[in-house]
Image 1 (cartoon, rainbow, N blue to C red):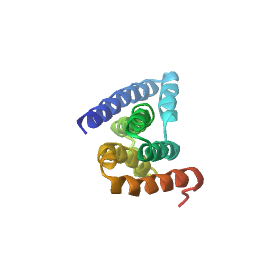
Image 2 (image 1 turned 30 degrees about the vertical axis):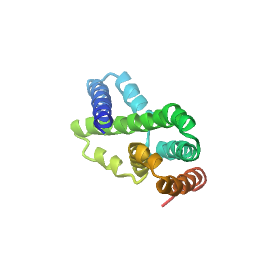
Image 3 (image 1 turned 90 degrees about the vertical axis):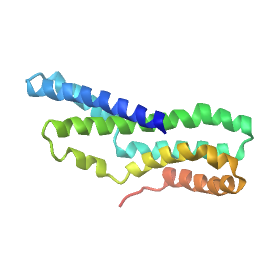
Length: 161
């Protein structure tokens, strides 16, 4: 949990500083400030987390049914990179919006209210609980079904509200 929070905060601060530099350059009249800010904006949005959640749920399915050694391989080489990507993308979004808020855009924080960020929180929560899920046979069976349902829902449901 401490590593997760520290990584999130570091990436949020770094992306916030880069966004603040881009906003400051734009305010000074340099056109390449907009280019930097648009690149930071283009990295992620809330809809990016739906396919990442599908990938993570599929690795969760594999970790629930595979033997210990193979599940460890999937965890280390599949689930952890997807978890890290989701964490970095969400921290980037938070950092950029915090920089915009700091430069006077009071509506910038409303971007963080998007309901699709639930997928990012789901990835982080599943990753932090994965060791406990692997230990208990009942939980492993239950979460096998949950991960299969989540994989199929993230791939084939539109999630339009």
